[in-house]
Each structure stands twice: as structure tokens, then as C-alpha cells.
Length: 274
Image 1: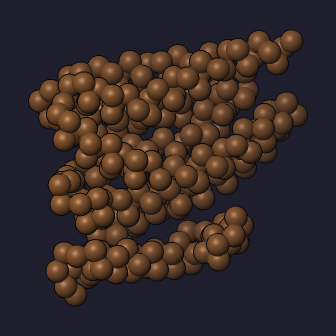
Image 2 (image 1 turned 180 degrees about the vertical axis):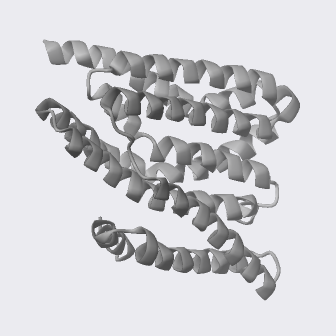
Image 3 (image 1 turned 90 degrees about the vertical axis):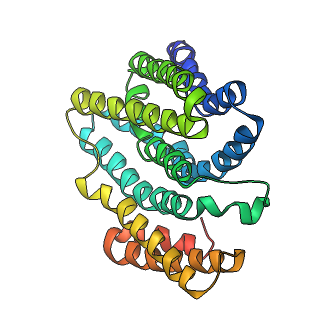
């Protein structure tokens, strides 16, 4: 019975968070042009690849956090969240920087009728990076009996997203929607992070977890510049830059950012295993 009531309270969290993932596209379609909506929708779909690892890892993270909380194991909770944030920063940061650097060249894939903006290609994956990397803060609330606080934060984020879209899209179009996504996801996840730190008595993660996405940006734009020196703006040259970026950042991630456990997981991903 207690589990049923908890599930009923947590269900709206999933609904509200799900709505946040496509509200920007719906409002751009209603307030912007069809061309803007098409281009933005294509880029948004690609940008959501940033969350592949966070969404997969979160399926098992929630129960582990809940078990630690039930045992009163605060150190265990912190270890679970720290481990997640470390690897999510590396994996999600890698995809974020790749989309930010090469996203404006998706017209080479979708066709010349599409035109992708570099500022939107940066802001959209940034919003999803913040959402994916800090997603476990939601588990740290909902899996420790604070699902109502989680719902209030998410509801405020959804309301803010709608308000920002309504304010910015008519004048800024795609850029306005991308700004709204980045600001809304940043606000929601930073508030959750602060609430978790205060409620549970520890700050999840380390300051060093901020480094991988920043280094990834440098590698991605550097690889793009080097590839551009080799030829014109073509699909082959862009693919060459992507391969160079993957090799460069992969080496740095394994040597500098990952601990032994993360190195093993990264190596497994590299060999095509999960």
C-alpha cells in the first residue's frame, strides 16, 4: 500500500519531466515558422543523443540509491552518485561537444534545404548535458521520500520553460527556444543539486567532473579546424574531423579523467560491449 501511494506521487514527476523534453518544439511549431520547426526538430533529435548513457544508467541507479537510503548508508549513496556523475560527465560531455562543434553541418546529412545554426547547435545539447549529467539528483530526492519536492521543482521548471518560449520564440525563433531549454534545464537541475546537498548532508560529485565537457569542446573544435585545413566543407571532411575528435578525446578521457572502473567501462564501450 505504501509503495502504491509513493508510485502515485512519483508518476506526475515522470509526466512533467517528459513534457519538458518536447515543449520547446511544440511551442516553436505554434509560434515560429514551419522551416524553423523542421530544422530545430532535427537538431533536437540529434542533441538528445547526449542523454543516451544517463538514461540507461539511471535505470539501475535509482534502486541502488534507494537501498542505500533504506540502510542509512549515506557514504554508499554518495559513492553511487559520485560514480555516476564521473562517467556521465565523460560520456555525455563527449556527445555534447561533438554536436556543438559539428551540429551546424547536419545539412550535409539532411540535405541542402536545411540550414542549422551554430549557436542553436551549442545551446540545445548544453541543456541536455545538464539534464543528463545531473539527472541522478532527481533520484536522490524521489528515492529518499522527497518526491513532492521533486514535483515542485520540475513543475516550476516546466512553467519557466513555457514562459521563456512564449517570450523568446516570437522574436528569436530557434535561438529563443534553445535559450529557453538551456536556462530551464540548468535551473531545474541546479536547484535539485542544492536541495540534495542540503537534505542529505553531502555534495555529490567533484569539481573535477566539470573538466571533461570543457576539454571535449576544445578537442571537438580543434579537430574541426584541423579537418577543415584538409579540404572543403564536405561530408567526408566532416566525418574525418569527427573521427579525429573521437580518437583525441577518447585517449584523454581514458588517461586523464577515468578511474580504474570507468576505464574498464569505457574500454568495453570502445570494443562494442555494454
